[in-house]
Amino acid sequence: MYALGWILTLFVRDSPLTFAVRVWDLFLAYGWSTFFSVALAVLYKARRQLMKTSNFETAMLTLKEIVTLFKREKIIK
Image 1 (spheres, helix red, strand yellow):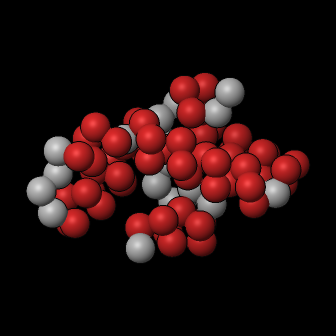
Image 2: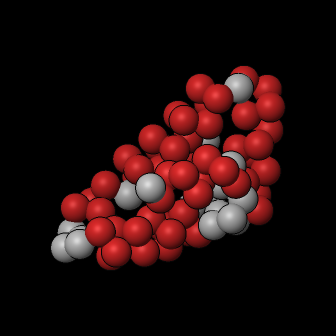
């Protein structure tokens, strides 16, 4: 369910502008496969924090917070 917000807004809603611009750039150049790769990379980077959560609401808050901390260079190479 949370990924739906990422899909509908292509990371613009919850992420820093530099990260969102890079995602859009890759999306326009390479299509949906790149977008889903970025989404999986975000989940991979957040895996330790997500495993520590005890319920769905906490996991969703963790995802929202973790995306705001990402720098484009750390996720997108």
